[in-house]
Length: 126
Image (tube, rainbow, N blue to C red):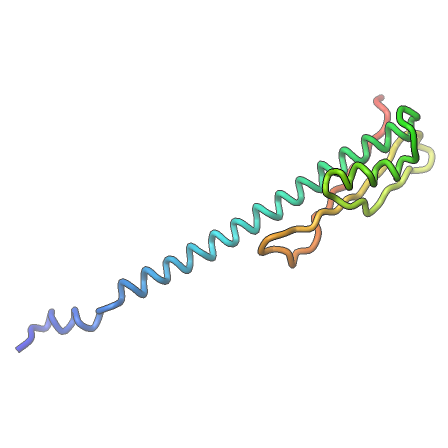
């Protein structure tokens, strides 16, 4: 004759395995999400840095401190920094000021988010 506690134990056989697999699955999803967020933040920082550097170089060009056309120089600097120049403008009435917009693709599991964007404005010191 089996005791009541023995019957109870046999009905829960394998429950630890299911619990462990569930925990591993949850942790795996957590780490994939964290990796994706880190990738997206990294792309955003890269886009902002490229925009800042491009705007500074373009502003120097607009002021005559460097040869060339400001937006061409901005595109070159963005490319060197692994970004793409999406916009470049010199506002009317503001001598030596350049507005720049750059983009960087977001990689990893969050590729579906598209592009990270950086905006920057640079001009002569006041």
